[in-house]
Length: 603
Image (cartoon, rainbow, N blue to C red):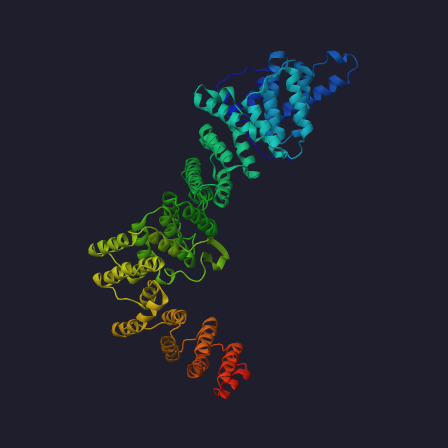
């Protein structure tokens, strides 16, 4: 089925200034019908019906020799009007979806015209390429007819053949550089190219849509889009641009700036449609005008939260701050697009964009102002995952990206602290949230000296440390032994400062104690777990059992079992059996532990 197309706009406008007399021939009659005040294409269709009736009468007559029959020329009244009539009528038939009639008229032209112009072939290729019924033989027949008739292909012909062969699954991408160069040269020449190549603009549009449909090379699609925008800016309608915007958003190789340009162009086209609709509305038709304007305006171009988040994720991956700023401004203008539960993801994606762009100050300030504390700590999942949509936006957590960015350069931690101190001096807000991120970078570098500078900044900007601060301070030590030595001091400091000892600190400290094989500190932290009803992970309890088994400390094993049961933590019976076997080897009574082991307790 042929798709809806209006190829008559330029034809009608070009003949608007002509004057006609009564008794005009068919070509003049058709031109008159295509004027703004004419009856339009449906009336012109009746002229074709007249020709078909005439054709049947002529061809059924036995008095005329077949070789002398030229029904189309005879119907038009003169040889000079034959091809112009055929070209205009083929455009009308194309516009009215009359493909079989168009094929018939084209075939008659091939019989009667000795040297038809290339425009006739271009209209024919245009019409059949818009249908789903053409095949390779039909295209090859048209090419052969051009060769036989001596019609020299122009750039419109090349674009048409590029379209049809691409749709047939052939790879004619090698044609594109030549097509692109010739088309750009014609459009930028400024020599009234629309009159010489009336179908160039519409063919560029079809080429663009074809390339989108087959998901072609992004560079080729963008070059075709630029040509189309250069040739006919009026064709930049939202309906044309939206598929490209979606493709650009989802295509890894396409930069986010392209999608942003398309959104801006579609918004501009939408505003133009509203303006035109407003101009066409009568002053007294208020209720009707409201509905028409609402229909013309429609909703925002970027109206889907997943698409918006994917576009922001693309901005983040490319580090394109300008595109990210545009998207954020657009989303602020249309607050209904992103639901409240996804706002955090938007802020994190913005943070990743700033980090990739190397904007340390802006990234720190954004973290401080827009990202909640719950989202400022990278979790166990090393990526940004949108749980409600089951969608992975980034393969790295933006806060962790900021941490790594600070740790990349030796002086960047000090630079970060200086920026935060300057902000505090200027009356801005600085909290433990941002300072802890800088401290995490120091932990990544294993740099105690830089960590002490962060601790000094805490006091300098009057911000109280948190349990996470002390956990990170432990991680800045070069090895587990030196870190474990600080744990008692840190516990005292936390009590003095009124900082709650959290499960994160206890688990981190216990893991370091096991790494350092420090039984005393480990059992002290085990007791802290009991006092605060914090469960001990199975992985960590297994390591504890093995350590106590090696030092043959039955008292600590009994204490550990009691704490595990009190905190409803899992007790691994295999590790307990290993301890029992070790104690029996040393003739240490442990029947009470055997009862726990045989019960297979899991807490």
